[in-house]
Image (cartoon, rainbow, N blue to C red; front, side, top):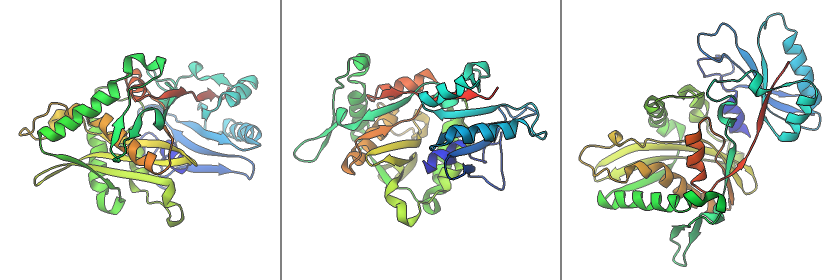
Length: 330
């Protein structure tokens, strides 16, 4: 999708900055399409590597093979690898059969060999986690799936914890349609604070999201995109704490590409009763799920993860795995 390619081929990242094409590059030859990015693994590295993102189309294999051969033979690009990511399993097998290498031969990151595809995409079936009563009020279900035995009540309990936090503080959480010209500075601060709070960030940087932060949907396609900024409000206080954006990738399927909620208690003022505040992230997702459901969405792709803890969080929302793959050109 458009936002996916902008995120994974962006030229804002300090390890692959592009002043000419900050939103990334796209290859298209009439029978195949894929994103093209160029990054160093670490800022201090002398060389960078090409990444091809999500090749699709009837002649994707021929186009990828031709493109990779041209890059590998370019004398201006010595010593680099060419990575191909967001592959479906049959695509990965086809490339391995041609001599490409599994990602474990040349991991992208020592802690996450396939960046945020190290752990699989997690897909939520909304009918399994939310429901509405006759009065129109949303409720969170107890999960049914055996694979979620340890997580069955986690989402519902988190939702209630944050509702109690709001009631205890006589506050509300307001989700507002995001407009870059109006909310861009606040949203950028949310992203920056999130990354600053991470103890061991893996892979992504705040700059990766600048293209999405600046993005305004074209007028003919506004129904395909969904972005919100969230404020915690009490009396005269209005704290920007949430930024979220994504895109429809099917008639009834939605993909999340950025979801930030400042969940550390120091983000709220000392005069607040903080018990339950840490559940803000789960509450955000569940409130957004309710909006999606009302707009005819039945499945939400929460994306993959770099870490086990993030993958576990997504599974606590009732998500089911769907793996995508990386390979490396020999």
